[in-house]
Amino acid sequence: MASAVPREGMNDLYQKIEKYVYEIRMIELDEYLYGMNKKKIDGEKVKEIIIDAHDPESNPVTNFWRARIADGLGFKWNGVKMNQWRAYELYRKAVDLNIEQMAENGDRYACTCLGEMYHQGKGVTLNHSRAVKWYRRAAEQGYACAQWYLGVMYGRQDSVNKDYVKAFDWYRKAAEQGHADAQYSIGLMYHYGHGVDKNVSTEVEWYRKAAKQGHVDAQFELEFPRQGHVDAQLSLEFPYQDGIFVYEVFPPEE
Image (cartoon, rainbow, N blue to C red; front, side, top):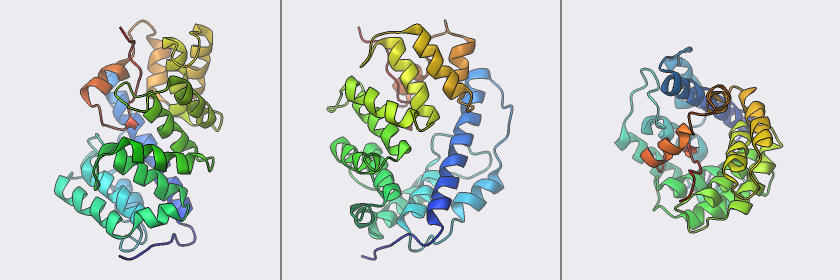
């Protein structure tokens, strides 16, 4: 197997991809919650930033993101054709390019991508314990995205690793770095009293922090606080979609 080491500037590319994927998620969620698209997804920009990402033949991380696009990421992508078989090939290519060795060498992006692959069983056998291992490896480097994902794993109702106190702690670490999903997740924790005492004013405070960054779920909660948490419905409907991907939430326990 070939091993791959990120070239100069690759970290900037990874950050650019993450930022754009966040923007796309918010556009799609806006349509889901409000029934209209206030913005449009630029298919050409998706292609430019992600599909044609630099060094696709030797870098497992860029292959992971290309796989996510082909996989759909749970979104329509406005004209970007989804292809599940192609996605599988690209996930496997990331494996063949030794994304695990890249992660073992301490690359936080490779650790997070590998965690996500095990989280959702993409290109590897689904294994939540291994997902936690790799998310933690990146989270301990202070990587906010991985810290949020690690919180997700501890907060899942169906997880063998369920621990709301740990979930809250990792969300907090990410939220304090300005991670909008983590800020929203903390709001939910305060709403349901998971890992922390219920506190409506603190809940709203965290929603506001996330809303200022364009987080549509948080904006929805502030606008329609009595409507309940739509994410809870989504997590039941799409239990392994991004919440990661993204819609991992904590519906009230009976």
